[in-house]
Image 1 (cartoon, rainbow, N blue to C red):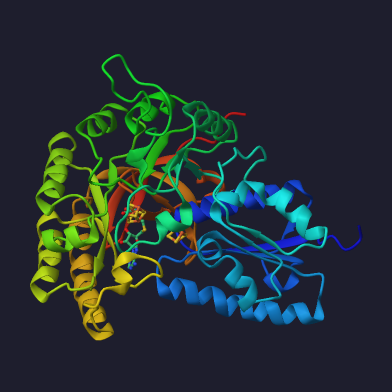
Image 2 (tube, protein in one colour; image 1 turned 180 degrees about the vertical axis):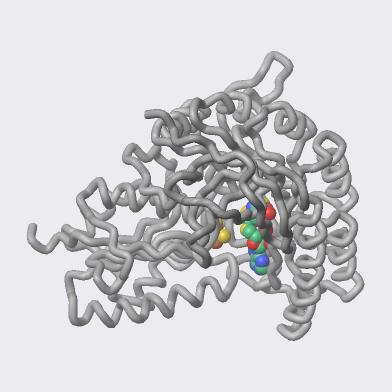
Length: 454
Ligand code: SAH
Ligand code: SF4
Ligand code: F3S
């Protein structure tokens, strides 16, 4: 059919989960014969993979979409798709708001893109937002990087944090089998990838929906068991995982990270608030004391591990004193990195309709104060690397200085050093750290690996 478009463009908003979904959808499109177009205006098929975690993330989509909907007036063959979390949240309503759309598809439908597109090309306007069992994708994702890759291990989230839209847009937890995960990693190893990040919204919940228990009644499939199961995949030199939930984090997991050489010394464990009353209102299911015990346990086994987290300020009813408890937790734990956000009411979540909402001024003032402390603490944590030799996995050229390459330490600090990307891409290089900044380091290579023998 001559009207079948041949160039596609994807813009991705939101978290790593969405990025991983986009890579799989791009793989499906390429398998169907589409070619990637960097410029959306040159593309015949445009897919926005959207995020609804906060109000501003959602608004961005509407402005992008408005522009392309106009273009469709001149180019009726343009296929417009909204995928991801806004698609799931809005469903049919999105078609009424933007009637030019050809398809609205929730995140659980990403792997079904080819089937759904066939319906679109047959002339239908498609809405795919019903809850489904997520099928394995049998095509090859088109990955951004040739060095590091994301591998989904569990989709969805069964928690009910009172501020959060994720459970209603991503559905219930669905774990992939250890065999499917390992097979994907083996393929990555064969293709030359060096680092894999295992992904889940609540990755510690991995496996609890899979069948099988040990003779003692313990679930056979946990994140810890998964790490043991995949850690020897040939070619993969580093393994990371995110995001951990304090409620399910175990000592067994920390010991596995300590024991398994490929698992990097970095933990991402959001705490959201340093105040017990706020944590309770958020329905997080732990206290700040419990959170501190987890960090102590990590530092007991792995004193140098880097620790990052997420926090929200200005949750409904948060007092100045309660906010200061968040500052205090950051001060005392000294995070290597903290992602911060001002609370944003999300449709359909319990906290959105509470009457004790705070003003935007209070929220942005607290966000600024928190961010100020975040950089101070991150800068302090960076200093411990000065003079040390760190293993850096080289990913890219430094966009600002082509004589330099950039990569990450095992603790996940961005590191720059002088070198030729053609020689170093994908190599593990020992780098002596000579400069530290809040969120990055610079250094000098002390051993440049020989070109690989073919
Ligand atoms: N599953 C992870 C994080 C999911 S969302 C966890 O449980 O921690 C990523 C981050 O977005 C959250 O950690 C939180 O800090 C932030 N976030 C989620 N909902 C939000 C909201 N309504 N307003 C502001 N920030 C929010
Ligand atoms: Fe959202 Fe809570 Fe689930 Fe994280 S654990 S995705 S914050 S509901
Ligand atoms: Fe956003 Fe959906 Fe991820 S709401 S943060 S893209 S799970």
